[in-house]
Image (cartoon, rainbow, N blue to C red; front, side, top):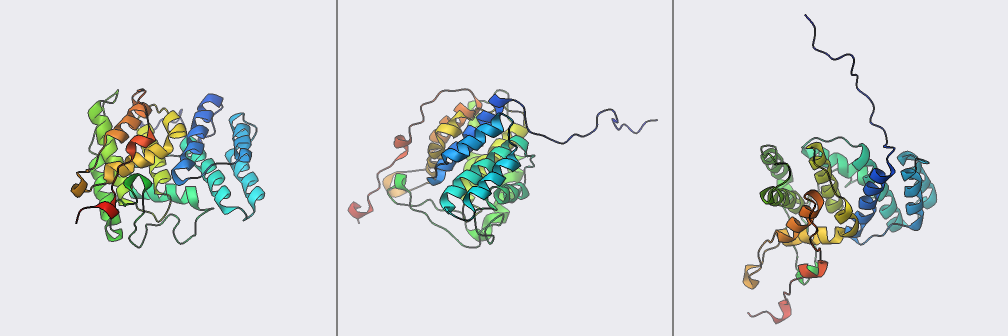
Length: 278
């Protein structure tokens, strides 16, 4: 009687890919995602990314070079560059579990070098609001901080019961949009929610075996964030309700090979509070 353990197939350490095209796809998404917070990576980071893509530098070496370059100065540029490098590394080498711990871990790995240690890898302890240009300076109603843990527990347990088809159907795309919206509207963290959510969703879908087209994240990450805003926002007085179609279009391009036009200007709504009827 044997133990059933396959001794001829041991575990191996996950190492960096030697495929330049694969790495470039990941780096493009990582760089593009900085736009969700109005950030742009430096030409120096792009040079280091090329070194990583070609195999001349590892991710650790890239990040070491960035820390030496900034040394505590130019905090905004440092954030864009180091977070892009962290995203690329996680997308290529990161494992995944569908759990709140994974969200916390991703947030900590992305932002431990740029955000205050009091908020990195920790759920926020206060409620938040944020003026949005596409909402005429109105805000999404984000989840109450007291409800973050139970909300995430509910959404993730519910998601674990869902089974996607191959290829993804329109219903699957809508389901993923709703799931992403729920995570994002909960807004678990004080800062960095969109980038954390994007990485979480990509790792999740990859863990299910889906191929991912990162071009939309590379070129249209601000559209992605604003699509999340529109999926959350409601203002019945102006006949405005949560609208998933923009996020559906984005995800159809990412997961279903579609070529929808992703026009950020189409996400703006006109809510003029000064001229509103009383």
